[in-house]
Length: 218
Ligand SMILES: CC(C)(COP(=O)(O)OP(=O)(O)OC[C@H]1O[C@@H](n2cnc3c(N)ncnc32)[C@H](O)[C@@H]1OP(=O)(O)O)[C@@H](O)C(=O)NCCC(=O)NCCS
Image 1 (spheres, protein in one colour):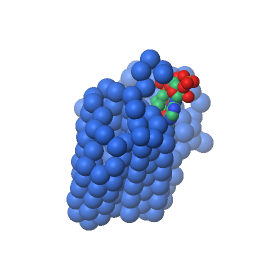
Image 2 (cartoon, helix red, strand yellow):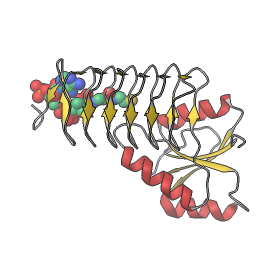
Image 3 (tube, protein in one colour):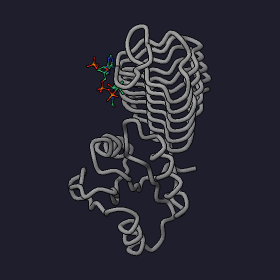
Image 4 (cartoon, helix red, strand yellow):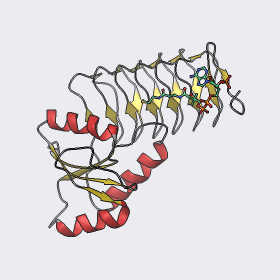
């Protein structure tokens, strides 16, 4: 299938700038931005429409949405939101592509789910599997046979060693290291710079080296 070159992005902040740069490197363009907040446009010359009503008003200006791709331009610990936005776009018939920076390295045996985004200098190694709407951020490394659920975000410079398993919506903070064969439950948060040496249950935030649960901010 031909790569789409016309995109719309939901999210008009910094992550939209990062995605727009990748889109322009593949000779594509961003037609419109959407955001639930009243924000200035993250991209010069591109209109930002507010919320679902704004999206519908933009749709009315389009003859046909065929061939237009939609992505969630939302970083941080917001995998649920990325998945909901993708489902919303899909419901309107938009394509949900995979976006990979040309300076990322993806193994030919890796699998990436729809809407996943791999940024510059990131690495996804042999037989790794990513779910939908994942972000592998700048200089992050996902080693061989990792299994990553939907909506995960591996922040800049974080490392997942081989055979790590992440359930849905896990957020791995910048520069964290997850040792081989560790499993991390859904909605868990790994603090920036943590070294994860034990499995992490669902919904738990851990910080430090070795990583320990952060309970009530302590
Ligand atoms: C772990 C994290 C989610 C906790 O956020 P939070 O719940 O708002 O926690 P707070 O900032 O209130 O900090 C609570 C305590 O944990 C400590 N703490 C917070 N993050 C920490 C970290 N990564 N490592 C070690 N200690 C940390 C704070 O110093 C504070 O300690 P204190 O109570 O003794 O002062 C957050 O600090 C973090 O690391 N986020 C990752 C950010 C990131 O990588 N972003 C990348 C975007 S692309």
